[in-house]
Image 1: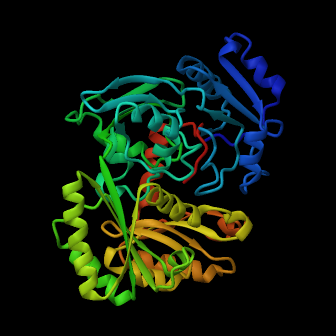
Image 2: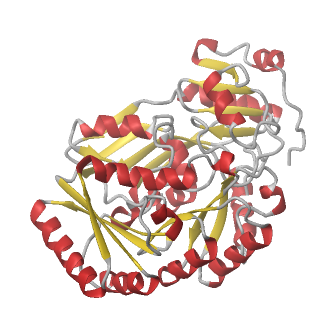
Length: 437
């Protein structure tokens, strides 16, 4: 295993690259480049990263640079635009940063087959804008979507409320290409929905946080943009919201999004209720009207307050819910966590946290921002509650710089960590990619 953690100088990097096409590669000093400087200084990574970011603009150059890193045993931290660079375990012993943000082309769009292959450095926003011109979209509503890249979203398995209808990131991937630590490219899957070759490998890279290789291309399945959309926000006591949750889960209704909202999150919308349930219905007008009418009737029978959102106000609502959880976390010194828990225990979890939170009603997966002043033993208590109810709590980001040194971010249980380390050693025997486990 590589224990050489010295950071190569700019002269050393250029010397190793003397036989390469330097027009296809950029060396960036993040301390001098405003977007990178702001991104890294806003996180807790400022003092644990080297200053130089290597930015190839094609796969061949990326492969060649990885071979150089392998020969010199330089440890690499992969990134796209760095929007989620500070999520999870803080990296250590990094020699160089490698960004894929210039690998941002569309390789193939099979419009009739509803599939697309894109390079990993393409922004999710740019991809959605392209697909919108064909009345199609990729159902991934990632955090920091203005900056997040395809590769970064896959590597962090980051999606939001749309998982109720479309599943998680791994459910949308048909194929994947990546560069190994020795610079060789490998592929799995294909370009058609029925292709299942390489299925496990695609799942393995989803949520891998750059531990196994650098993702270069991804093939996704797409969906038509729904013609109509409305959101119902149902609010009331914990007992009444749980009653409605059970009725919806036992019904044949098909909401696109279905999130339980914490009291703090509801109150931040200037609504004074103990709990909320946000349901989004999309599709043809007749279906939306029928399903929303049924939910409204159930809510009235139970005694819940109903608020309906449409058009731009509906879009603003879902954007606002994400921003409330993730915005200004460093200024407020909160702790943003990704959680999983039994759906029947979500409301009990909210009672423990007193923070902004939204959790998918059907899967129990979501995000919570624990408020400023939360103590370490309280964080551990919330994690234990999740684990006792078949779930987990991962610390993604925090305004408290020491929290990830005091509390293990991932919260491993059982033999999961041991198994992941074995997989890591098989993919990356020289430990070229910085260990985020």
